[in-house]
Length: 63
Image 1 (cartoon, rainbow, N blue to C red):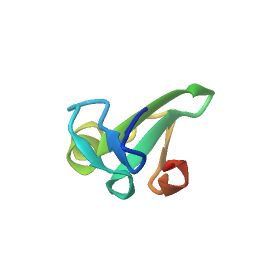
Image 2: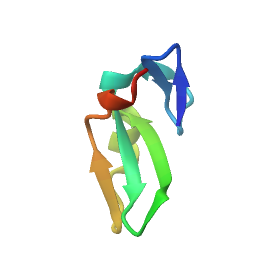
Image 3: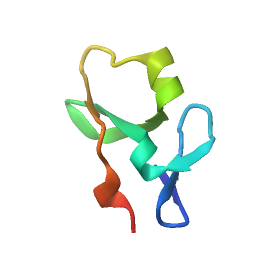
Protein backbone atom coordinates (compact mmCIF):
# COMPACT_ATOMS: atom_id res chain seq x y z
CA UNK A 1 0.00 0.00 0.00
CA UNK A 2 1.37 3.38 -0.99
CA UNK A 3 0.10 6.20 1.22
CA UNK A 4 0.49 9.68 -0.30
CA UNK A 5 0.36 12.89 1.76
CA UNK A 6 -0.89 11.00 4.83
CA UNK A 7 -4.55 10.80 3.79
CA UNK A 8 -4.46 9.59 0.19
CA UNK A 9 -3.54 6.19 -1.19
CA UNK A 10 -2.57 4.82 -4.60
CA UNK A 11 -4.76 2.09 -6.12
CA UNK A 12 -2.62 -1.01 -6.68
CA UNK A 13 -4.38 -1.77 -9.96
CA UNK A 14 -4.82 1.52 -11.84
CA UNK A 15 -2.21 3.52 -9.85
CA UNK A 16 -4.51 6.54 -9.48
CA UNK A 17 -4.49 8.41 -6.16
CA UNK A 18 -7.67 8.58 -4.04
CA UNK A 19 -8.64 9.77 -0.54
CA UNK A 20 -8.14 6.87 1.85
CA UNK A 21 -11.87 6.88 2.67
CA UNK A 22 -12.66 6.05 -0.99
CA UNK A 23 -10.66 2.82 -1.32
CA UNK A 24 -10.93 -0.75 -0.02
CA UNK A 25 -8.33 -3.26 1.06
CA UNK A 26 -8.35 -6.73 -0.47
CA UNK A 27 -6.54 -9.30 1.70
CA UNK A 28 -5.66 -12.95 1.27
CA UNK A 29 -7.33 -14.65 4.22
CA UNK A 30 -4.54 -17.14 4.82
CA UNK A 31 -1.72 -14.64 4.38
CA UNK A 32 -2.15 -11.12 5.78
CA UNK A 33 1.05 -10.12 3.98
CA UNK A 34 -0.93 -10.04 0.72
CA UNK A 35 -2.86 -6.78 0.66
CA UNK A 36 -4.05 -4.76 -2.32
CA UNK A 37 -5.68 -1.34 -2.16
CA UNK A 38 -8.40 -0.95 -4.79
CA UNK A 39 -10.52 2.01 -5.85
CA UNK A 40 -14.26 1.44 -6.38
CA UNK A 41 -13.89 1.04 -10.17
CA UNK A 42 -11.09 -1.53 -9.90
CA UNK A 43 -12.91 -3.39 -7.13
CA UNK A 44 -15.92 -3.62 -9.43
CA UNK A 45 -13.72 -5.10 -12.17
CA UNK A 46 -11.87 -7.55 -9.90
CA UNK A 47 -14.48 -8.39 -7.26
CA UNK A 48 -13.53 -10.42 -4.20
CA UNK A 49 -11.97 -13.73 -5.31
CA UNK A 50 -12.48 -16.88 -3.26
CA UNK A 51 -10.08 -16.98 -0.33
CA UNK A 52 -9.89 -13.19 -0.02
CA UNK A 53 -11.55 -10.76 2.36
CA UNK A 54 -12.43 -7.11 1.87
CA UNK A 55 -12.04 -4.25 4.31
CA UNK A 56 -13.94 -1.19 3.20
CA UNK A 57 -12.91 1.14 6.03
CA UNK A 58 -9.16 1.62 6.26
CA UNK A 59 -9.21 5.25 7.40
CA UNK A 60 -7.38 4.21 10.60
CA UNK A 61 -4.25 3.80 8.42
CA UNK A 62 -4.15 7.52 7.52
CA UNK A 63 -1.39 9.34 9.23
